[in-house]
Length: 166
Image (cartoon, rainbow, N blue to C red; front, side, top):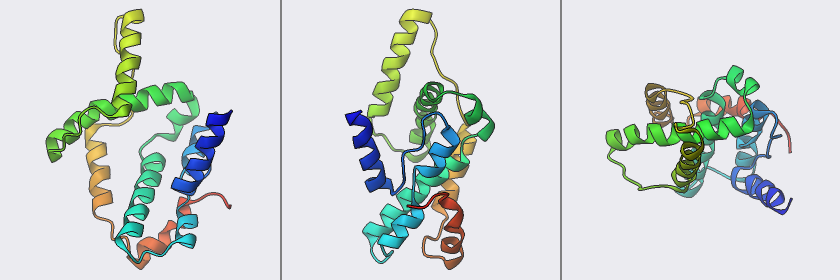
């Protein structure tokens, strides 16, 4: 219970959203990031706030545009988390090669490798499936890269980024 409360507080502070119900992945993804709340409390007048805003918008777009709603309706949180980690690790290899970025093993990769090792010991084959393709991920990165954060048309269109009030 304490960890859930800490997660709830950190999510509200870092992403200006609320932690969605664990059983409804679509709702969880829509409520995870509160862009309007961030903009109410911050001005986009310096690099720090622009960077925070880009991070929030990227998170919102990733969780609301990259995953098929039909899949999210039919899967469990545990299956989503496993497949999401698997997707990140598998597609990260191509991203590292394309952009020349080498971060080493991240905590998410360590978590997934542990899950895969345990699964291999029990089942003898890797666990996880790709949730989207390398091409879809690269198109997403390109779309985010081309956003003009201060464009009035872009900012006016953000009303669909939040589906809840605070």
